[in-house]
Length: 259
Length: 303
Image (cartoon, each protein chain N blue to C red):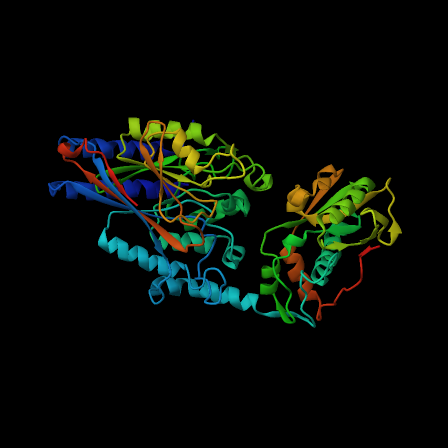
Protein backbone atom coordinates (compact mmCIF):
# COMPACT_ATOMS: atom_id res chain seq x y z
CA UNK A 1 0.00 0.00 0.00
CA UNK A 2 0.88 3.65 -0.13
CA UNK A 3 3.30 5.31 2.21
CA UNK A 4 1.87 8.35 3.90
CA UNK A 5 4.26 9.08 6.68
CA UNK A 6 5.74 12.12 4.95
CA UNK A 7 2.39 13.84 4.82
CA UNK A 8 1.12 13.19 8.27
CA UNK A 9 1.52 16.82 9.25
CA UNK A 10 -0.34 17.92 6.21
CA UNK A 11 -3.01 15.27 6.65
CA UNK A 12 -3.56 16.36 10.24
CA UNK A 13 -4.13 19.90 9.08
CA UNK A 14 -6.38 18.57 6.40
CA UNK A 15 -8.43 16.66 8.94
CA UNK A 16 -8.84 19.79 11.08
CA UNK A 17 -9.77 21.68 7.96
CA UNK A 18 -12.38 19.10 6.98
CA UNK A 19 -13.82 18.86 10.48
CA UNK A 20 -14.24 22.62 10.66
CA UNK A 21 -15.67 22.66 7.21
CA UNK A 22 -18.16 19.90 7.95
CA UNK A 23 -19.35 21.39 11.27
CA UNK A 24 -19.51 24.95 10.01
CA UNK A 25 -21.48 24.16 6.90
CA UNK A 26 -24.41 22.68 8.86
CA UNK A 27 -25.60 19.41 7.39
CA UNK A 28 -23.01 19.09 4.65
CA UNK A 29 -24.12 16.43 2.18
CA UNK A 30 -22.17 15.26 -0.78
CA UNK A 31 -22.98 16.88 -4.06
CA UNK A 32 -24.73 14.99 -6.81
CA UNK A 33 -23.05 15.03 -10.13
CA UNK A 34 -25.76 15.98 -12.60
CA UNK A 35 -24.08 16.97 -15.84
CA UNK A 36 -20.74 16.44 -17.57
CA UNK A 37 -19.60 18.25 -20.69
CA UNK A 38 -16.39 17.33 -22.44
CA UNK A 39 -14.60 18.97 -25.32
CA UNK A 40 -11.18 19.48 -26.79
CA UNK A 41 -9.88 22.98 -27.35
CA UNK A 42 -7.24 23.53 -30.05
CA UNK A 43 -4.25 25.61 -29.02
CA UNK A 44 -3.79 27.31 -32.34
CA UNK A 45 -5.06 30.84 -32.42
CA UNK A 46 -2.34 33.25 -33.32
CA UNK A 47 -2.21 36.64 -31.70
CA UNK A 48 -3.30 35.29 -28.34
CA UNK A 49 0.12 34.97 -26.75
CA UNK A 50 0.57 35.89 -23.11
CA UNK A 51 3.28 38.62 -23.02
CA UNK A 52 4.42 37.64 -19.52
CA UNK A 53 5.04 34.03 -20.63
CA UNK A 54 6.63 35.12 -23.92
CA UNK A 55 9.07 37.38 -22.09
CA UNK A 56 9.91 34.60 -19.68
CA UNK A 57 10.71 32.11 -22.47
CA UNK A 58 12.71 34.55 -24.60
CA UNK A 59 16.11 34.44 -22.83
CA UNK A 60 16.01 30.63 -22.81
CA UNK A 61 15.07 30.52 -26.49
CA UNK A 62 17.69 33.08 -27.48
CA UNK A 63 20.42 31.17 -25.68
CA UNK A 64 19.47 27.87 -27.31
CA UNK A 65 19.17 29.38 -30.79
CA UNK A 66 22.49 31.15 -30.51
CA UNK A 67 24.16 27.95 -29.40
CA UNK A 68 22.40 25.68 -31.89
CA UNK A 69 22.98 27.93 -34.88
CA UNK A 70 26.66 28.68 -34.44
CA UNK A 71 28.55 27.10 -37.36
CA UNK A 72 30.73 24.14 -36.41
CA UNK A 73 31.71 22.61 -39.75
CA UNK A 74 31.02 22.64 -43.49
CA UNK A 75 29.66 19.84 -45.64
CA UNK A 76 30.53 19.93 -49.37
CA UNK A 77 27.59 17.60 -50.15
CA UNK A 78 24.22 16.61 -48.77
CA UNK A 79 24.49 13.28 -46.99
CA UNK A 80 21.23 11.36 -47.14
CA UNK A 81 20.26 7.98 -45.75
CA UNK A 82 18.08 7.12 -48.75
CA UNK A 83 20.83 7.05 -51.37
CA UNK A 84 22.27 3.57 -51.19
CA UNK A 85 21.22 -0.06 -51.12
CA UNK A 86 23.77 -1.47 -48.67
CA UNK A 87 25.54 1.66 -47.42
CA UNK A 88 24.90 5.37 -47.41
CA UNK A 89 27.21 8.33 -47.09
CA UNK A 90 25.57 9.51 -43.85
CA UNK A 91 25.52 5.99 -42.36
CA UNK A 92 29.19 5.51 -43.17
CA UNK A 93 30.00 8.85 -41.59
CA UNK A 94 28.05 8.17 -38.40
CA UNK A 95 29.54 4.72 -37.87
CA UNK A 96 33.05 6.00 -38.63
CA UNK A 97 32.65 8.88 -36.21
CA UNK A 98 31.39 6.55 -33.48
CA UNK A 99 34.50 4.37 -33.83
CA UNK A 100 36.78 7.40 -33.90
CA UNK A 101 35.26 9.34 -30.98
CA UNK A 102 34.29 6.23 -29.04
CA UNK A 103 37.89 5.01 -29.15
CA UNK A 104 39.04 8.16 -27.35
CA UNK A 105 36.96 7.13 -24.35
CA UNK A 106 37.36 3.36 -24.74
CA UNK A 107 41.15 3.44 -25.09
CA UNK A 108 41.55 5.78 -22.14
CA UNK A 109 39.24 3.81 -19.87
CA UNK A 110 39.71 0.20 -20.92
CA UNK A 111 43.01 0.24 -22.86
CA UNK A 112 41.19 -1.54 -25.68
CA UNK A 113 40.20 -0.62 -29.23
CA UNK A 114 36.81 -0.70 -30.91
CA UNK A 115 36.90 -3.11 -33.89
CA UNK A 116 33.67 -2.16 -35.56
CA UNK A 117 30.47 -0.18 -35.20
CA UNK A 118 26.93 -1.11 -36.16
CA UNK A 119 24.03 1.33 -35.81
CA UNK A 120 20.53 1.22 -37.26
CA UNK A 121 19.34 2.83 -40.46
CA UNK A 122 16.11 3.93 -38.71
CA UNK A 123 18.07 5.83 -36.09
CA UNK A 124 19.24 8.46 -38.58
CA UNK A 125 16.43 10.98 -38.32
CA UNK A 126 17.45 13.69 -40.80
CA UNK A 127 19.85 14.53 -43.61
CA UNK A 128 23.18 16.27 -43.20
CA UNK A 129 22.60 19.18 -45.56
CA UNK A 130 25.20 20.70 -47.84
CA UNK A 131 26.64 23.88 -46.39
CA UNK A 132 27.13 25.05 -42.83
CA UNK A 133 26.75 22.41 -40.14
CA UNK A 134 25.56 23.45 -36.67
CA UNK A 135 24.62 21.74 -33.42
CA UNK A 136 21.03 21.97 -34.65
CA UNK A 137 22.02 19.59 -37.46
CA UNK A 138 23.19 17.09 -34.85
CA UNK A 139 19.93 17.47 -32.91
CA UNK A 140 17.95 16.82 -36.08
CA UNK A 141 19.96 13.77 -37.14
CA UNK A 142 20.05 12.34 -33.62
CA UNK A 143 17.20 13.69 -31.47
CA UNK A 144 17.28 10.75 -29.06
CA UNK A 145 19.29 10.56 -25.88
CA UNK A 146 20.99 7.30 -26.85
CA UNK A 147 24.40 6.53 -25.43
CA UNK A 148 27.33 4.90 -27.13
CA UNK A 149 28.11 1.45 -25.70
CA UNK A 150 30.78 -1.10 -26.59
CA UNK A 151 29.99 -4.81 -26.45
CA UNK A 152 32.49 -7.62 -26.43
CA UNK A 153 31.16 -10.16 -28.95
CA UNK A 154 32.42 -13.54 -30.09
CA UNK A 155 33.13 -14.17 -33.77
CA UNK A 156 29.85 -16.08 -34.09
CA UNK A 157 27.92 -12.95 -33.30
CA UNK A 158 29.82 -11.06 -36.00
CA UNK A 159 28.48 -13.69 -38.41
CA UNK A 160 25.01 -13.00 -37.02
CA UNK A 161 25.51 -9.28 -37.66
CA UNK A 162 26.25 -9.98 -41.32
CA UNK A 163 23.24 -12.30 -41.56
CA UNK A 164 21.02 -9.66 -39.92
CA UNK A 165 22.09 -6.97 -42.39
CA UNK A 166 21.38 -9.28 -45.34
CA UNK A 167 17.99 -10.30 -43.92
CA UNK A 168 16.85 -6.75 -43.12
CA UNK A 169 17.88 -5.49 -46.60
CA UNK A 170 18.70 -2.01 -45.27
CA UNK A 171 21.84 0.09 -45.43
CA UNK A 172 22.68 -0.18 -41.73
CA UNK A 173 25.48 2.18 -40.70
CA UNK A 174 28.58 0.01 -40.48
CA UNK A 175 32.25 0.77 -39.90
CA UNK A 176 35.35 -1.40 -39.47
CA UNK A 177 33.79 -4.40 -41.20
CA UNK A 178 33.33 -5.37 -44.84
CA UNK A 179 31.79 -8.40 -46.49
CA UNK A 180 30.31 -9.74 -49.70
CA UNK A 181 26.78 -11.00 -50.10
CA UNK A 182 26.97 -14.27 -52.03
CA UNK A 183 24.30 -15.33 -54.54
CA UNK A 184 22.75 -17.62 -51.93
CA UNK A 185 22.23 -14.60 -49.62
CA UNK A 186 24.96 -15.57 -47.19
CA UNK A 187 27.93 -13.47 -46.14
CA UNK A 188 31.39 -14.32 -47.32
CA UNK A 189 34.80 -12.73 -47.24
CA UNK A 190 34.07 -11.04 -43.93
CA UNK A 191 36.89 -8.71 -42.92
CA UNK A 192 37.18 -6.88 -39.61
CA UNK A 193 39.74 -4.09 -39.58
CA UNK A 194 40.93 -5.51 -42.89
CA UNK A 195 41.62 -8.99 -41.46
CA UNK A 196 39.58 -12.16 -42.04
CA UNK A 197 37.04 -12.90 -39.32
CA UNK A 198 38.43 -15.17 -36.60
CA UNK A 199 35.54 -16.95 -34.89
CA UNK A 200 37.69 -17.63 -31.80
CA UNK A 201 38.44 -13.98 -31.25
CA UNK A 202 36.56 -11.45 -29.11
CA UNK A 203 35.58 -8.32 -31.02
CA UNK A 204 34.69 -4.95 -29.51
CA UNK A 205 31.58 -3.62 -31.22
CA UNK A 206 30.29 -0.09 -30.73
CA UNK A 207 26.55 0.58 -30.98
CA UNK A 208 23.91 2.57 -29.12
CA UNK A 209 22.24 1.47 -25.89
CA UNK A 210 18.84 1.06 -27.60
CA UNK A 211 20.23 -1.56 -30.00
CA UNK A 212 22.45 -3.11 -27.32
CA UNK A 213 19.29 -3.82 -25.35
CA UNK A 214 17.76 -5.71 -28.29
CA UNK A 215 16.12 -2.82 -30.15
CA UNK A 216 15.30 -3.43 -33.87
CA UNK A 217 15.63 -7.19 -33.17
CA UNK A 218 19.39 -7.03 -32.92
CA UNK A 219 19.29 -10.05 -30.63
CA UNK A 220 23.00 -10.88 -31.13
CA UNK A 221 23.95 -8.00 -28.84
CA UNK A 222 22.38 -9.81 -25.89
CA UNK A 223 25.00 -12.55 -26.34
CA UNK A 224 27.81 -10.18 -25.40
CA UNK A 225 30.44 -11.39 -22.95
CA UNK A 226 31.04 -7.90 -21.60
CA UNK A 227 29.38 -4.51 -21.88
CA UNK A 228 30.97 -1.07 -21.54
CA UNK A 229 28.76 2.00 -21.30
CA UNK A 230 30.79 4.94 -22.51
CA UNK A 231 28.32 7.49 -21.03
CA UNK A 232 28.69 9.41 -24.27
CA UNK A 233 25.53 10.48 -26.08
CA UNK A 234 25.52 9.81 -29.82
CA UNK A 235 24.44 13.37 -30.45
CA UNK A 236 27.42 14.65 -28.48
CA UNK A 237 29.66 12.32 -30.46
CA UNK A 238 28.43 14.11 -33.59
CA UNK A 239 28.69 17.60 -32.11
CA UNK A 240 32.23 16.97 -30.85
CA UNK A 241 33.17 15.60 -34.25
CA UNK A 242 31.72 18.64 -36.06
CA UNK A 243 33.69 20.92 -33.75
CA UNK A 244 36.85 18.99 -34.55
CA UNK A 245 36.63 18.90 -38.36
CA UNK A 246 36.52 21.81 -40.72
CA UNK A 247 35.09 20.12 -43.81
CA UNK A 248 33.13 16.87 -43.54
CA UNK A 249 34.84 14.12 -45.56
CA UNK A 250 32.57 12.10 -47.83
CA UNK A 251 33.07 8.40 -47.16
CA UNK A 252 31.97 6.63 -50.32
CA UNK A 253 33.99 3.44 -49.88
CA UNK A 254 32.05 0.23 -50.44
CA UNK A 255 31.68 -1.85 -47.29
CA UNK A 256 29.12 -4.38 -48.43
CA UNK A 257 29.17 -5.72 -51.99
CA UNK A 258 26.77 -8.05 -53.75
CA UNK A 259 27.84 -10.85 -56.01
CA UNK B 1 11.89 18.91 1.88
CA UNK B 2 11.33 21.41 4.71
CA UNK B 3 10.38 24.04 2.19
CA UNK B 4 7.75 21.82 0.58
CA UNK B 5 6.17 20.95 3.89
CA UNK B 6 6.11 24.60 4.81
CA UNK B 7 4.40 25.45 1.55
CA UNK B 8 1.88 22.68 2.06
CA UNK B 9 1.06 23.88 5.56
CA UNK B 10 0.83 27.47 4.47
CA UNK B 11 -1.40 26.46 1.61
CA UNK B 12 -3.64 24.50 3.96
CA UNK B 13 -3.95 27.34 6.46
CA UNK B 14 -4.58 29.85 3.69
CA UNK B 15 -7.30 27.60 2.38
CA UNK B 16 -8.71 27.38 5.88
CA UNK B 17 -8.73 31.13 6.26
CA UNK B 18 -10.37 31.80 2.98
CA UNK B 19 -12.94 29.11 3.67
CA UNK B 20 -13.73 30.72 7.04
CA UNK B 21 -14.52 33.92 5.23
CA UNK B 22 -16.55 32.32 2.53
CA UNK B 23 -18.66 30.33 4.98
CA UNK B 24 -20.49 33.44 6.13
CA UNK B 25 -21.63 33.97 2.58
CA UNK B 26 -22.51 30.34 2.06
CA UNK B 27 -24.18 29.77 -1.24
CA UNK B 28 -27.88 29.12 -1.18
CA UNK B 29 -28.06 28.40 -4.86
CA UNK B 30 -26.29 25.09 -4.78
CA UNK B 31 -25.32 24.32 -8.34
CA UNK B 32 -21.58 24.02 -8.47
CA UNK B 33 -19.55 24.11 -11.63
CA UNK B 34 -16.06 22.61 -11.80
CA UNK B 35 -13.88 22.84 -14.91
CA UNK B 36 -11.12 20.28 -15.40
CA UNK B 37 -8.46 21.34 -17.90
CA UNK B 38 -5.82 18.89 -18.95
CA UNK B 39 -2.80 18.21 -21.14
CA UNK B 40 -0.58 15.18 -21.71
CA UNK B 41 2.70 14.34 -23.47
CA UNK B 42 3.66 17.96 -24.04
CA UNK B 43 7.26 16.75 -24.46
CA UNK B 44 9.00 20.08 -23.94
CA UNK B 45 7.04 21.74 -26.76
CA UNK B 46 7.27 25.25 -25.43
CA UNK B 47 7.20 27.09 -28.75
CA UNK B 48 4.39 26.58 -31.30
CA UNK B 49 5.23 24.42 -34.30
CA UNK B 50 6.66 26.56 -37.12
CA UNK B 51 4.37 27.67 -39.95
CA UNK B 52 6.11 25.29 -42.38
CA UNK B 53 5.80 22.20 -40.17
CA UNK B 54 4.37 19.40 -42.35
CA UNK B 55 2.14 17.94 -39.61
CA UNK B 56 1.20 20.59 -37.06
CA UNK B 57 1.83 24.01 -38.59
CA UNK B 58 1.28 26.90 -36.16
CA UNK B 59 -0.18 24.61 -33.52
CA UNK B 60 0.50 24.54 -29.80
CA UNK B 61 2.76 26.82 -27.79
CA UNK B 62 2.82 27.46 -24.06
CA UNK B 63 2.13 31.16 -24.38
CA UNK B 64 -1.11 30.51 -26.29
CA UNK B 65 -2.10 27.73 -23.94
CA UNK B 66 -1.61 30.13 -21.03
CA UNK B 67 -3.90 32.66 -22.74
CA UNK B 68 -6.57 30.03 -23.34
CA UNK B 69 -6.41 28.84 -19.72
CA UNK B 70 -6.66 32.43 -18.51
CA UNK B 71 -9.79 33.03 -20.61
CA UNK B 72 -11.41 29.94 -19.12
CA UNK B 73 -10.45 30.94 -15.58
CA UNK B 74 -12.18 34.28 -16.12
CA UNK B 75 -15.32 32.50 -17.19
CA UNK B 76 -15.19 29.98 -14.31
CA UNK B 77 -12.57 30.45 -11.61
CA UNK B 78 -13.30 26.95 -10.29
CA UNK B 79 -10.64 25.23 -12.40
CA UNK B 80 -8.45 22.21 -11.80
CA UNK B 81 -5.50 22.14 -14.23
CA UNK B 82 -3.85 18.73 -14.66
CA UNK B 83 -1.19 17.00 -16.76
CA UNK B 84 -0.88 13.27 -17.43
CA UNK B 85 2.91 13.08 -17.75
CA UNK B 86 5.76 13.12 -20.27
CA UNK B 87 6.41 16.76 -19.65
CA UNK B 88 10.04 16.15 -20.60
CA UNK B 89 11.91 15.33 -23.80
CA UNK B 90 11.29 16.39 -27.36
CA UNK B 91 12.91 19.74 -27.98
CA UNK B 92 16.30 21.28 -27.17
CA UNK B 93 14.66 23.12 -24.25
CA UNK B 94 14.87 19.84 -22.39
CA UNK B 95 18.38 18.99 -23.59
CA UNK B 96 19.68 22.39 -22.53
CA UNK B 97 17.76 23.03 -19.32
CA UNK B 98 16.70 19.57 -18.16
CA UNK B 99 13.03 20.46 -17.67
CA UNK B 100 13.53 23.63 -15.66
CA UNK B 101 11.63 25.82 -18.10
CA UNK B 102 8.81 23.26 -18.50
CA UNK B 103 8.20 23.17 -14.72
CA UNK B 104 8.53 26.93 -14.33
CA UNK B 105 5.99 27.61 -17.08
CA UNK B 106 3.54 25.04 -15.72
CA UNK B 107 3.88 26.74 -12.34
CA UNK B 108 3.19 30.12 -13.96
CA UNK B 109 0.05 28.69 -15.59
CA UNK B 110 -0.95 27.48 -12.12
CA UNK B 111 -1.08 23.77 -12.85
CA UNK B 112 -2.50 21.94 -9.84
CA UNK B 113 -0.93 18.53 -10.43
CA UNK B 114 0.81 16.22 -12.83
CA UNK B 115 1.55 12.53 -12.87
CA UNK B 116 4.86 11.06 -14.01
CA UNK B 117 5.45 9.68 -17.51
CA UNK B 118 8.23 7.37 -18.65
CA UNK B 119 10.08 10.22 -20.36
CA UNK B 120 10.13 12.17 -17.13
CA UNK B 121 12.84 9.67 -16.13
CA UNK B 122 14.97 10.57 -19.17
CA UNK B 123 17.56 12.41 -17.12
CA UNK B 124 17.31 9.78 -14.42
CA UNK B 125 15.75 10.12 -11.00
CA UNK B 126 18.46 12.63 -10.15
CA UNK B 127 17.49 14.72 -13.18
CA UNK B 128 13.85 14.77 -12.09
CA UNK B 129 14.78 15.47 -8.49
CA UNK B 130 16.94 18.41 -9.56
CA UNK B 131 13.94 20.09 -11.24
CA UNK B 132 11.51 19.64 -8.34
CA UNK B 133 12.26 23.08 -6.81
CA UNK B 134 10.94 24.67 -10.03
CA UNK B 135 7.47 23.13 -9.67
CA UNK B 136 4.82 24.64 -7.45
CA UNK B 137 2.30 21.99 -8.49
CA UNK B 138 1.94 18.49 -7.05
CA UNK B 139 3.34 15.28 -8.48
CA UNK B 140 0.86 12.47 -7.99
CA UNK B 141 1.54 8.81 -8.58
CA UNK B 142 0.11 5.87 -6.66
CA UNK B 143 1.77 2.81 -8.22
CA UNK B 144 5.44 3.77 -8.28
CA UNK B 145 7.16 3.19 -4.96
CA UNK B 146 9.99 5.72 -4.70
CA UNK B 147 10.87 4.73 -1.12
CA UNK B 148 14.43 3.70 -1.96
CA UNK B 149 15.15 6.59 -4.32
CA UNK B 150 15.91 10.32 -4.09
CA UNK B 151 12.28 10.99 -5.07
CA UNK B 152 11.05 9.54 -1.78
CA UNK B 153 8.45 11.86 -0.30
CA UNK B 154 8.26 14.17 -3.31
CA UNK B 155 5.47 12.31 -5.10
CA UNK B 156 2.08 11.95 -3.46
CA UNK B 157 -0.03 8.82 -3.86
CA UNK B 158 -3.12 11.01 -4.05
CA UNK B 159 -4.33 14.47 -3.30
CA UNK B 160 -7.74 15.82 -2.41
CA UNK B 161 -8.52 19.23 -3.84
CA UNK B 162 -11.33 21.24 -2.35
CA UNK B 163 -12.75 23.26 -5.17
CA UNK B 164 -15.47 25.64 -4.03
CA UNK B 165 -16.92 22.95 -1.76
CA UNK B 166 -16.45 20.10 -4.24
CA UNK B 167 -14.09 17.42 -2.99
CA UNK B 168 -11.97 16.16 -5.87
CA UNK B 169 -9.73 13.16 -5.23
CA UNK B 170 -6.89 12.76 -7.71
CA UNK B 171 -4.59 9.75 -7.92
CA UNK B 172 -2.02 8.77 -10.53
CA UNK B 173 -0.92 5.65 -12.40
CA UNK B 174 2.34 5.13 -14.25
CA UNK B 175 3.35 2.68 -16.93
CA UNK B 176 5.60 -0.34 -16.33
CA UNK B 177 9.16 0.93 -16.52
CA UNK B 178 11.08 -2.30 -17.16
CA UNK B 179 11.80 -2.61 -20.89
CA UNK B 180 10.69 0.96 -21.55
CA UNK B 181 13.07 3.01 -19.44
CA UNK B 182 16.69 2.17 -18.78
CA UNK B 183 17.10 0.69 -15.29
CA UNK B 184 19.92 3.17 -14.68
CA UNK B 185 17.34 5.92 -14.99
CA UNK B 186 14.61 4.62 -12.68
CA UNK B 187 16.92 2.69 -10.35
CA UNK B 188 15.03 1.31 -7.33
CA UNK B 189 11.62 2.67 -8.31
CA UNK B 190 9.13 -0.18 -7.82
CA UNK B 191 6.21 -0.57 -10.23
CA UNK B 192 3.02 -1.87 -8.63
CA UNK B 193 -0.03 -3.30 -10.40
CA UNK B 194 -2.14 -0.33 -11.55
CA UNK B 195 -5.51 -2.08 -11.25
CA UNK B 196 -4.89 -3.19 -7.65
CA UNK B 197 -3.58 0.23 -6.70
CA UNK B 198 -6.56 1.90 -8.40
CA UNK B 199 -8.91 -0.19 -6.26
CA UNK B 200 -7.07 0.85 -3.08
CA UNK B 201 -7.20 4.47 -4.17
CA UNK B 202 -10.90 4.54 -5.04
CA UNK B 203 -11.74 2.79 -1.77
CA UNK B 204 -9.88 5.52 0.04
CA UNK B 205 -11.05 8.49 -2.01
CA UNK B 206 -14.67 7.57 -2.66
CA UNK B 207 -15.61 5.37 0.30
CA UNK B 208 -13.50 6.77 3.12
CA UNK B 209 -12.86 10.36 2.09
CA UNK B 210 -16.24 10.65 0.35
CA UNK B 211 -14.90 12.64 -2.57
CA UNK B 212 -17.54 14.06 -4.91
CA UNK B 213 -15.32 13.30 -7.87
CA UNK B 214 -12.46 10.87 -8.37
CA UNK B 215 -9.96 11.50 -11.17
CA UNK B 216 -7.21 9.16 -12.28
CA UNK B 217 -4.21 10.77 -13.97
CA UNK B 218 -2.84 7.93 -16.04
CA UNK B 219 0.25 7.43 -18.13
CA UNK B 220 -0.70 3.83 -18.97
CA UNK B 221 -1.77 4.59 -22.53
CA UNK B 222 -5.23 4.67 -24.13
CA UNK B 223 -5.15 1.18 -25.66
CA UNK B 224 -2.74 -1.28 -27.33
CA UNK B 225 -4.18 -3.04 -30.33
CA UNK B 226 -1.14 -5.30 -30.75
CA UNK B 227 -0.95 -6.34 -27.13
CA UNK B 228 -4.19 -7.36 -25.53
CA UNK B 229 -2.63 -8.32 -22.22
CA UNK B 230 -1.18 -4.88 -21.58
CA UNK B 231 -3.10 -2.68 -19.16
CA UNK B 232 -4.46 0.53 -20.68
CA UNK B 233 -6.93 3.26 -19.80
CA UNK B 234 -9.89 1.56 -21.48
CA UNK B 235 -9.24 -1.67 -19.56
CA UNK B 236 -8.59 0.17 -16.34
CA UNK B 237 -11.98 1.85 -16.70
CA UNK B 238 -13.71 -1.52 -17.16
CA UNK B 239 -11.92 -3.31 -14.36
CA UNK B 240 -12.45 -0.75 -11.61
CA UNK B 241 -15.22 1.31 -10.06
CA UNK B 242 -15.69 4.73 -8.45
CA UNK B 243 -13.43 6.50 -10.94
CA UNK B 244 -15.31 9.32 -12.68
CA UNK B 245 -12.65 10.46 -15.10
CA UNK B 246 -9.42 9.00 -16.44
CA UNK B 247 -7.10 11.57 -17.97
CA UNK B 248 -4.61 9.62 -20.01
CA UNK B 249 -1.34 9.96 -21.84
CA UNK B 250 1.58 8.04 -23.31
CA UNK B 251 0.00 6.79 -26.54
CA UNK B 252 -0.36 10.33 -27.97
CA UNK B 253 -3.96 9.48 -28.79
CA UNK B 254 -6.06 12.12 -30.50
CA UNK B 255 -9.74 11.59 -29.71
CA UNK B 256 -12.65 13.41 -31.29
CA UNK B 257 -14.36 13.36 -27.92
CA UNK B 258 -13.92 11.67 -24.53
CA UNK B 259 -14.69 7.94 -24.56
CA UNK B 260 -17.45 6.66 -22.28
CA UNK B 261 -16.84 3.21 -20.75
CA UNK B 262 -19.03 1.16 -18.40
CA UNK B 263 -17.10 0.25 -15.27
CA UNK B 264 -17.30 -2.89 -13.10
CA UNK B 265 -20.41 -1.52 -11.37
CA UNK B 266 -22.09 -0.58 -14.68
CA UNK B 267 -21.50 3.13 -14.23
CA UNK B 268 -20.08 5.47 -16.84
CA UNK B 269 -16.43 6.46 -16.75
CA UNK B 270 -14.99 9.15 -18.99
CA UNK B 271 -11.61 8.43 -20.58
CA UNK B 272 -9.89 11.30 -22.30
CA UNK B 273 -6.55 12.14 -23.88
CA UNK B 274 -5.64 15.13 -26.03
CA UNK B 275 -2.91 13.93 -28.38
CA UNK B 276 0.46 15.42 -27.62
CA UNK B 277 2.85 18.40 -27.80
CA UNK B 278 0.41 20.88 -26.29
CA UNK B 279 -1.57 21.03 -29.53
CA UNK B 280 -4.85 20.70 -27.63
CA UNK B 281 -6.23 21.44 -24.22
CA UNK B 282 -8.82 19.04 -22.80
CA UNK B 283 -11.81 20.53 -21.06
CA UNK B 284 -14.35 18.61 -18.96
CA UNK B 285 -17.04 20.53 -17.10
CA UNK B 286 -18.73 18.94 -14.12
CA UNK B 287 -21.98 20.32 -12.73
CA UNK B 288 -23.05 19.37 -9.21
CA UNK B 289 -26.40 19.81 -7.52
CA UNK B 290 -27.23 19.66 -3.84
CA UNK B 291 -30.97 19.43 -4.37
CA UNK B 292 -32.12 16.03 -3.16
CA UNK B 293 -34.97 15.96 -5.59
CA UNK B 294 -32.47 15.61 -8.39
CA UNK B 295 -30.35 13.01 -6.70
CA UNK B 296 -31.99 10.05 -8.37
CA UNK B 297 -32.12 11.45 -11.84
CA UNK B 298 -28.62 10.34 -12.74
CA UNK B 299 -26.20 12.34 -14.74
CA UNK B 300 -26.24 13.51 -18.29
CA UNK B 301 -23.03 13.33 -20.26
CA UNK B 302 -22.61 15.67 -23.21
CA UNK B 303 -19.54 14.95 -25.26
